[in-house]
Image (cartoon, rainbow, N blue to C red; front, side, top):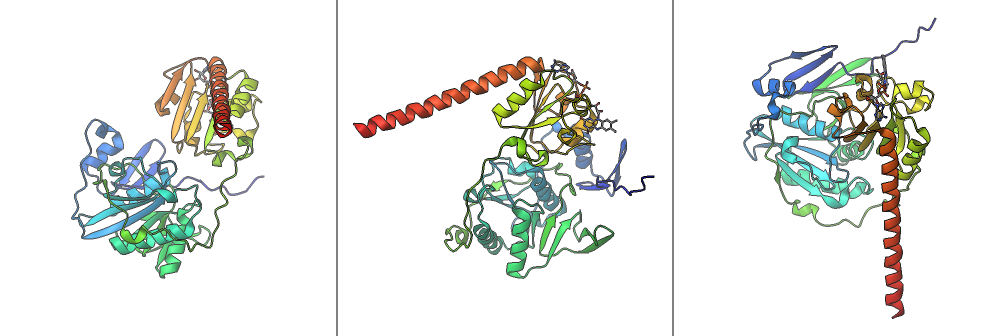
Length: 391
Ligand SMILES: Cc1cc2nc3c(=O)[nH]c(=O)nc-3n(C[C@H](O)[C@H](O)[C@H](O)COP(=O)(O)OP(=O)(O)OC[C@H]3O[C@@H](n4cnc5c(N)ncnc54)[C@H](O)[C@@H]3O)c2cc1C
């Protein structure tokens, strides 16, 4: 008999503007007061109306949220952290967002009232000392009551811990529950739950807070505080750059670009060749795996991998709820399907209604052509340079 205990990996609740949102099958139960705007946010009826601005008294008190961006965008976890600050902020509190990297997202829609950008400190660059100095300078300039960061392994979690250690600040990590007075996290390997009053630094766990807000912030871009402008040459770290890996070697959960095949893909060889041409990792629906076309480790979904790609192209995948569960954190989803009313089309940012096989062939052809053209351009450019040097 198999008596291994299994733990439900899903969090049983999430903090939303309306209070604690319990997740039960088929229903949403809201604990706490529900205001009209939050109701609208939950049921989608707000989409037609412009969201109201959160009103606050500027300069009275501030919460500072810091996060690294990637190619101009903040990931879902960073958005949840901003939302956490905006949800708990009262009328005397403004939310200041410090972004390491550029921000092309609408900061107001994220709930931020002020935004400071450090474009040179984006995620691919490894500059922990400069990021720490920039954060300290922002804290001295804005004097926030608390600092919040996403507790991730891609720079922000590390930065929060370094900052707290450097300035001797109190800190709570892996925070899964937050309200205006308390934060809570699991302790003793998840056996007990600990709460405390807000510390100086809060590192928020992923999926603890709903990023969707029923209001917007002021979204005002402000200049980098003058103390933070001076470049620091005193770093003890050397950034040796990034290494390009074969996409097939990247774990699906870490892949930034995934193409995925479902039951509608019959030419598996062409699909795999396209993945190679695009430099994308391969995913699959459960049916495609059950059919023996792909190994089980390629399965995306509730009983497979949860992926976090910037681009996810789903070829011939219907978009069953179990599959959608695995791609909920993907930034851009593109669907290729014969059926424009397939559920995947509701989730997709772009749907191509057409045959998977012919789309794969056409796409592979276009990419090859573009690659050749860019080689020609490079070859032409170097020829021009050679001619120029010779002349
Ligand atoms: C407990 C449980 C757990 C599950 N876990 C998972 C999971 O982790 N991951 C997962 O993926 N599924 C999972 N499933 C299965 C899930 O319910 C669906 O059955 C499965 O995702 C369907 O796969 P599919 O979309 O590839 O196939 P289908 O449902 O057969 O859909 C094929 C799609 O391809 C389109 N199509 C057909 N021919 C073409 C063509 N020539 N060109 C373009 N489009 C075409 C069709 O219009 C259709 O939309 C689970 C089910 C259960 C009950």
